[in-house]
Length: 126
Image (cartoon, rainbow, N blue to C red; front, side, top):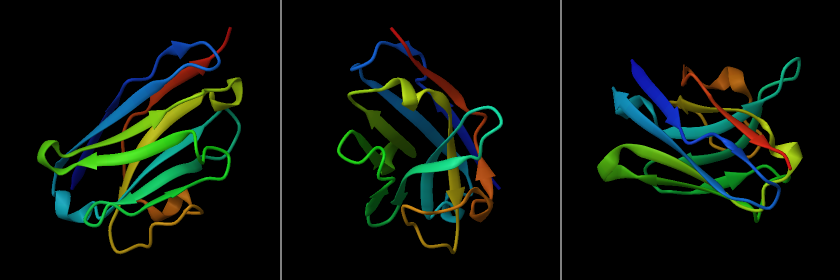
């Protein structure tokens, strides 16, 4: 089993920045592909960014490319999502996810990931 715990979500103004954190515990060997998803009520959970935990290779949804950055700190078993130049459309519940034996891409679907955190809310509003 893998446990994920997100933090860092809050309310910010458009143009602001936030950094989300996801602490990974348990059988971390089963968290080879890490991802951040986001979801609004009555909508699908969409991938934002993914990272291979071993190589650090990253992928981004087109809507966040050049504004968001996913990274990992192996020594802290933590994955981050740095979000810059935030827009109102970025408002959502953000979820950290872990998967094993899957390919990290910028088009991963939620069903591919076995482990999920509880989510952290990001609200971008003036």
